[in-house]
Length: 326
Image (cartoon, rainbow, N blue to C red; front, side, top):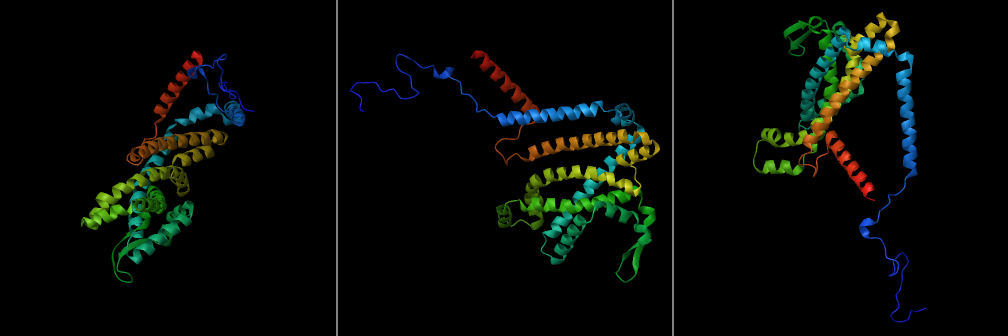
């Protein structure tokens, strides 16, 4: 049915002359309701509250004994050994990983085969097996000598005198860490665009200079954040050096637990909290390292926790003002 000429056609949802609509600025856009999200949030909050309540009120944890042991000299001495082993193993493991990665990328088939075999073997053998094998290495080889194979030795030394508990722990962790670091470094080098290699070669630069000044600095953007993440696993891996008679953080707590069997749970909680602190510090370092090397790769750097908090507070104040204005 057609309308007469001059008639006003009112579409659904539009305002007529006798019923004006609200100004556009006064209209509110209602967010989409998500009841499932609110239900899931409520369930998670209830579970977290129950866990925290049980953790605080359960007398089995003996928090008073935990406070007694947390800063005891025995625990702090073990913590210092853990930090020493971690630092030495991290540096030696990274250096070994760089050498293995370069050998894996070499044109020499012998170097490639040896590097691949090393990485394959050390990533397949459990770390505890490596440590125990090195701890009993003197039983297999009384002396270690260097010289011509099947010929005279230039010099030799008594392995049992040099292989202290600290040396065995550092060597075992470094050998294991180098296998994983090699793959991190190799992946970082391969992540550099092939055009960078071609441009450096076109300039006639020596291979060593290309690697040191062009390829490797760009590969660090991928290597360092990933290797910092690897340090978290290394910190936890130091707990195994107790089995080679080195009293690190876990070993000190285990020894005190044997002397004071009633304090085993508080001592384990002490170790847990210290490992949480150490890994949290490394995680913070990892965040800022990744943020530093993200420059030039992303348009906007990821915000820091302080920036996130400031943005959240600013958004909350703006929302409150809008609610009050309406």
